[in-house]
Image 1 (cartoon, rainbow over the protein chains, first blue to last red):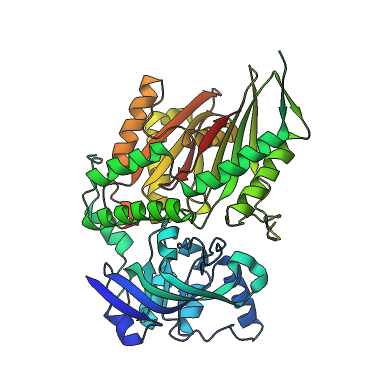
Image 2: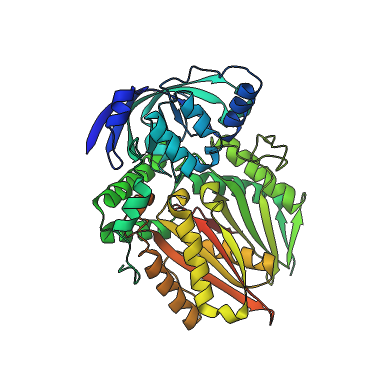
Length: 188
Length: 281
């Protein structure tokens, strides 16, 4: 089912999404990947605050290539989400509304998505040029020294993604592969 | 007859190859992707494949890298033994080419100086360079920028000889099954069988640079490539890992003699772009 969704995402909307829904996201998201997550974790451990209010916000696991002149951003596709699994349940418990990435998540993340009525979207891995066209502005808001791994605030428009893990515990990676599995090998 | 080659020529070629590989799909991969688009059974899978095709078009037309992970530069250099390199070292020349290519091509700098301290070198150097001395007076350079979404899903298995061909199949299917959506399928699977621990990993990496759709000259290995491709596409992972029949575009297997006590198998996984480009100087 195709849906147009505003981000940041409200609880009601997040809960209405189901694994397999094809969505177009419009609004604001924040980028963070390995190094930024490590820093955020350290900040929290030391009793500090996150560089932005995470309530309802969407984190996009992405580190762009440099922008050419006149463009907001370079290639900007998703990175593998499981590297952030260690940090994710805590951020979800703090109110993070959704994540965009690619690849499988841990059982702990799947539980935390359900517990908090959140959602995990996958963008198509390797489609960085196409996805860059859905980003209209990009601004570094924290950890500038991390280069591509800095936290950026992005404006996105009709950004294509697929609901992979929903608030009801659905996991499209598990169910979709089952459907096309041939026990005696493929038929290509 | 000794032939002199100025290392500046190496730098210039490496620079261009880094930029080209990151913006333009290799022809063999284009053909493989077309074949997958025709055979894919899942409607969502077909939609993902058409997104990937659109992505490649945008990348080439607007000079935006195909993927934001423009990789760590892996360089294979076959140096003819009658070549005399002038003006500096091969390694420095290659790294200078990578430095310029990643700066001028607006490519992402993804290399950290120390694996534990993790400070970015900010110019994507050093490259990983594999040099081979061969007969002749030519220089063959292959650049294969490697992204880590798929690299992280690669594996090495030190099997026992008794595990035989079934053990090899299991190893490959295990690695691909575990990789699933993480490796940006449809993927290319490079397999090394034989050699020692490090030789086996190198065989798998070299196998990725072999043309997709080509086969091993050894009949039993060609048969294994075909059977494994069929089995992998029966895993159901599909484009983007969202279910379907196009999980791999190619399985390339390279082999080497090994020890009486061993059967090493390395599985190096790459995404559907499988960047590789070769030039002969």
